[in-house]
Length: 266
Image (tube, rainbow, N blue to C red; front, top):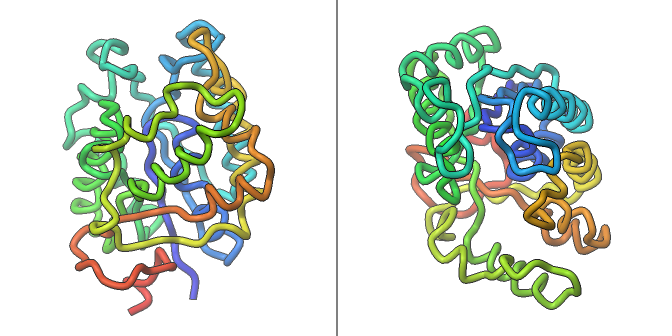
């Protein structure tokens, strides 16, 4: 039996970083994968000046990444990017949107697709970006409105992330801000995680999706996370990014699940 997975993200490239392997795996297994992004990421850090031109470029990058992952449908809700500290976008910024209004728009897509599973972010938005926090609020409300049965918070196992960062810190050319201590309170503790999805077989698709977001590889502030990941040798990339993590809302923790559709399979 096949199912429909809708992934809700804040900006282009978030889908590849947090859920790229999961989306590629679901598509490869014959499920329908739909990608919904709140903003075009026009306030993102990049060598291109922030604004409509960057947003247009990032929309095309999103389409290319979605194709690499096997997504059947891509929707951009069209809210303004709030910026890292909520300094951009003004009244049209996604972080300032009325939650019920934004949720109704997403719920319409969930109903059209008869979604079985929706991915959002953890309540803290992973590392606190205001648009990521809003994704969690809007996504949970949209699932309530549409009756979507399973909501998964896309996150990262904090302890696993810190282990990877300690390894990466030994490699030449790794930026100083890849300090594991910066993530002491980011993302999710291992004890809260319900799903550890093995995506090693789909590392190539995830890498291609990341590479599609070329505007985010560098900025005037220096090397970005995406660029560092793409410089990793393929075996190390596969090992470091071969698991994607989720917390299923309303599910008790127990043995980690490797199937995002486990709860709807019954």
